[in-house]
Length: 136
Image (cartoon, rainbow, N blue to C red; front, top):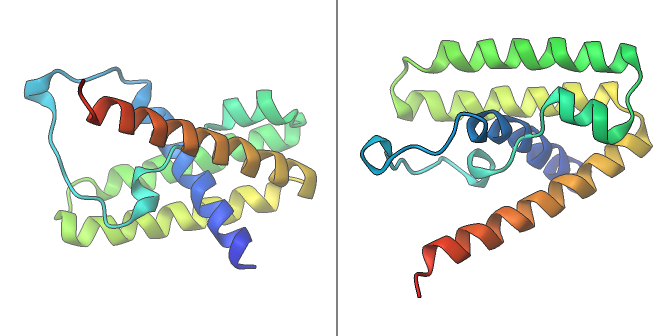
C-alpha cells in the first residue's frame, strides 16, 4: 500500500511538471526560487495526452483523464493567490487526490507501466538537476 501511495504521488507530480516545462525556460530575471513543501512538488507531471499515447488508453479512459486534468488545473489556479504557506499544502492535497483519480481510471497493468515511466522520468530529472547544479 505504501509503495502504491508513493507511486501515485510521483505520478501526480509528474503530470503537473509537464505543464510547467511546456511554458519554456524563464530568463534569469524571471526566475524565482521557492522551497517546495516536499519532494512531491518538485516531481515531474505526466499529462493526460501523454498517458493516452504512452499507455494505450481507450477513448473512454482518455476522456476521463482529460476531464480530471482540467479540474485539477483549475483547482490549482484557484490556489495561486494564496500565501505560499497556505497554498503549498493545499496543492499537495490536490495532487494527491488527482493521483488517486488517475489510478482509478487506469487498469492495474497501465498503473504499473505509468509508475515505471514516472520513476524513469524522476531519475532523469534528478540526473539533469545534478548536472546543471555542478558547473565545471
